[in-house]
Image (cartoon, rainbow, N blue to C red; front, side):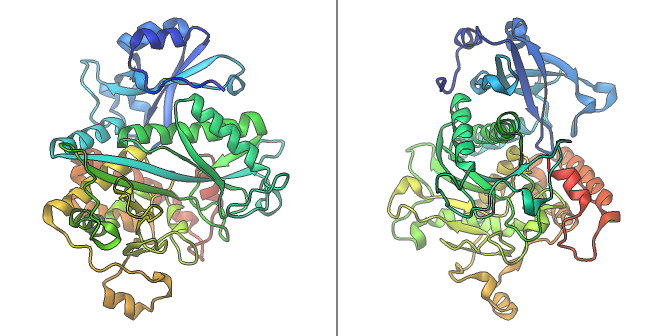
Length: 462
């Protein structure tokens, strides 16, 4: 297994590592969180690293108008990654790029830049954010036409959560291959497992700052699909809710705050509830205050709201607690008393969100809570799904939006969330997502939770 040093910051070292490559993939992320980019021969590496590569920005979701379409993608050296040879039967390396205008200025709608600005603002205010993510996905067989077989008969396995029996859990070998690939791409894998659904999987990688974690999320999805397709002839799908009666795919987000002056965890207080500080409670208060609007970014598709329904671990109620997986915000307690482990888990995001934008709005909402000293209310330590509606009202437990349209309406009235992206980006996002909702409306089923053919066609391969 090839493992490169991470991160690479030296220009000459980067060029040397490409000696045996044939091609370079240049990636960037559009507003909806999909990888875009182009491929260049390795002979063009030096020019690409120094000058960047031009492209038509008017054809990209969330890009520019046709009158100002010339844009430049510049590789970020620290994101250098090596693809396994079997991906393309060639030597291929990749970079994630920053997007610039022809005058050299950063493109204000580049999601990576939006996240960088939010992180820099937090650092100036004395907060160093840490970010992690847990992404779930399904593995499904393909037929001869490359399409998905009927699900009940052709999921890769019939196993369940934490199954690990040799010869039965055939996805274990796949997860090991994917872990090897992530290591070769510079991502430190911490653990991997079979998830709750048949043929559902999760690999967890090491936390970092929001930008690096977002980069790693994008590479993780890219690698998961490539390993499945090229080595196993399977499909890896990150669709939030591919099938009605099976668990959905979530992307639980973990976030922490450290003091830039002394390096101490600002979320930790050994005397507090779940050993959380008052500052952390305010951060949670901000997230709960803006939760309905945040859904427009972190649960960004029509299908996302088929996952956010009762009966599974996906949250629908706006509450917080320690250990309680029915709450929207959970305080992990795996390692009680360890200061560096103090963090919170935000459970409604799913893998089709744009991670750069998701971390941006989550950070801004939480810091708004600290600034305004927003109390989160009392934690709800019982299963929220088992509470009566009257009891939930008594406890002040709200409900998340039940559709993408509802979430977008909440977004439009939330100034903190709008300012997090910038007004122009926010308006562009709302316009594009409302178009997506209108495309779906003619296909709306009688049972609102039913998964429609329109959704499968649009999101299964996303």
